[in-house]
Structure formats: C-alpha cells, structure tokens
Length: 379
Image (cartoon, rainbow, N blue to C red; front, top):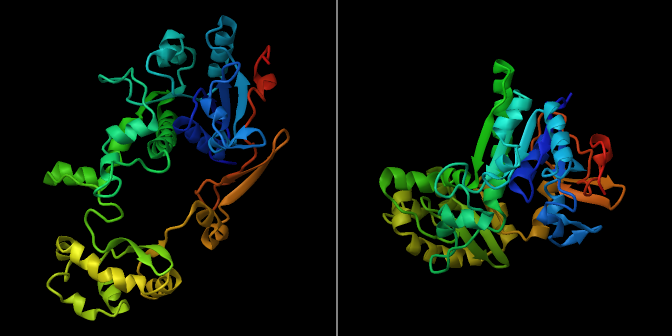
C-alpha cells in the first residue's frame, strides 16, 4: 500500500506551484482530481513547446492526476463540487485571495460540509497583509524577496533564476504542509486551513543570506558564481570549458593546494585560512585562473575526485539529463497516454526502500475523467 492510497485530493490549482505539489501527492498514492472550468482554466496548456499537442510545461506538473470539468459559478456544478468535498480529504487552490469566498467555497464553507477537510490555499502574498489581494507570479516573487538582487554578475543586472524557483520551493511546502495536517488529523479528527504564500516561502529560503543580515547586519551582494562566505568556490574556465570548483573546508583547501602544485599556499599569509582567502579572493582567483586553464575539464575532474574535492562540469540541459549519474539513478521515466502518446519526465527524487512510488497516469487531457465523477459531464 502506498502511503496516501486512501486519500482524495481536489485540485483547483493551475500553472506550477500548487499543481506540482498535488502531483507529488499523486506520486505518493493519493487520488488527485483536477477540477477545471469548461474550456480550461490552466494557462500552461497554451505554453509551448508541445509534444503530441500537449504543452510540455503542463506535462511537467500534472502526472498521476485525473481531470473533470465543473463550472463552480454554476449552481448545479457548485453542489456537485460540494458533494465531492464530502468524500474527499484535501482541497488545494491558488485562486486570488477572496475569490473562493465570493463563490461560496472558502475554508469555512468547505469545513461546514466536511469538518475533516484540509484546505491549502497558495497565493503570491498570503491571505493577510497589504498585498494579500495582489497577484504574484514567480519572477515578481524572486524580485521582491531579494533573490534577484543576489543573483547575477557583480557588475551586471539583478537576474532571476533559470527555473521558477519560488514556485518549485512552494510546491514542496504544499506537500509538507498537507502531510503535517494529515498527521495532526490522525490525532484530532479535524482538518485545517493552510495559508501558503510564495513570498513567505522564498524569503524563508534566503538561508545564509538572510542570516547574515539579521545577525551581522551584513548585506550580501551579487557575486556571480562566487560564494558569499567561502573561497575558492566558483566556476573557472578549463582548457575546454567551464567547471565548478567547491573548496568548502580547510581540509579540502590543503588537498587542493597539493593537487594544483602550490603546497606553499597552505601557509601563505594571504590564503592560510578561509577568512584570509575571502579577503584576498581577487588575488587568489587571479593566480588560480591560468593554473585551471592549463588542463581540460576531464583532467581536473580526475584530480578533484582523487583528492575528494567537490567539482563538476557546467552542463547544458542535454548534458545534464543524459549524464551517466542520472542514467544510473534511473531518474527519467515514461508514461503512455492513449490519446497523445508517450510522456517522458523526471521522476520523483524520493528513493525509499519500500515507499512504492508509481507512475500510472499521464497528465490528463481536459475533462478526461468527468464521466467518472460528474453526473452530467460537460464537453
């Protein structure tokens, strides 16, 4: 039995943050039912590129789900949805603050129908505060959280991360929050409301950057591929391309000095401990650059592995997804859909000894499963 096999999720969400979270619940065995408006309510269905006529963006967040069509503003469909709530465990939405209340479907109204329901609402800024009613997409959150200000080259512009990182992190907290609420329900017999904000998640994920400011009044700056606290810890150009070097401890630094043929740097007053290396980082990088450039990436990887120093190629997406380590971990999966063919995807990274993650359902076409749940299915 998979851990969430007897749990039903009504998924009112769209785009990525909440849908990716409910997808993970589906991976863990929950029955996840996407409730969509007739005509479609998820804009990602129209975001290319496409495979078999389906948006690859939509495909990456919606496996292990079913899809039904209900117009929640229609009285009959509204009642059908409440009937489903009575038989379900979780409702997930990412409507703007106040929208579900206006439709008679906020937590208080769902709880009146099913006191055990767990309702998770994902919004840009949460249900309270001066921005509660404002929309918030991932790049806006990256900007407002301070993440963009510490991302990019020192003399360049503030830069967003190449994937929707605020959405991705929030999807994880969707799962964490719901699993915690399910566990608490085991004790109390009651459900609860989860108010999840993308801005809260991204600010909470500033990690060492926020800690440096809050505890030492230190404001981090854009450093490109360097580290705020450690050196040498950055990308260097080898003879045939870029390689990330992470010399993260004093022990690794001593091994690194031996590996590059500069044992005297272990006691050099400029570089003998991490604080001095950070203070003299420009000089250290200047000296290292021609040394690193004299060998290929494969030569350096062999040296780093011999000395147990972290490092890795700066891979393209093609190289990343096809590298031997990813293949060895069996990380790429495929599901067949009868209407649009095979869907390849990156699997859930959880690898428990007996968890039993399965990939049974390809991302559904709009309304594909309405006949199973809706009394009068809409086209």
